[in-house]
Length: 138
Image 1 (cartoon, one colour):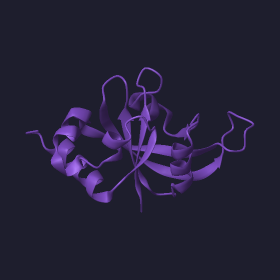
Image 2 (tube, one colour):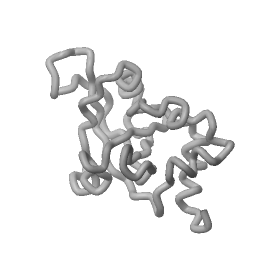
Image 3 (cartoon, helix red, strand yellow):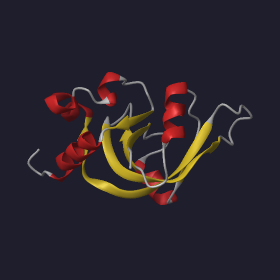
Image 4 (cartoon, one colour):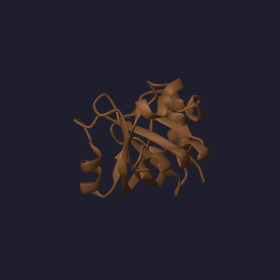
């Protein structure tokens, strides 16, 4: 199983919108590296949902429910989508500042490739971030 992070601006599509919908087609990706990451996603992979631009925090966990297929929002065959389902809202958001301040996360794509909208997350990074959310003292 792989782990990922997807970004969404909360004023465009928030975690709350995602939960209300119950599933989402992750479309509109027009960056080749992000597209390649979508293509690499497998059904059952875990995905962090990150609020970008506003909030700057990981707020929930989703699961890949359908693997890559052609993006229905364009006639260009180069672009793909996946389908995600929300699993749970984090007990508390984990901010970008928290992530940046932890030496164990200095190689995470969220810091190193901050503009990328779909990125892989190592299992150890995923577990560590999840532990931050569960730690009420942080």
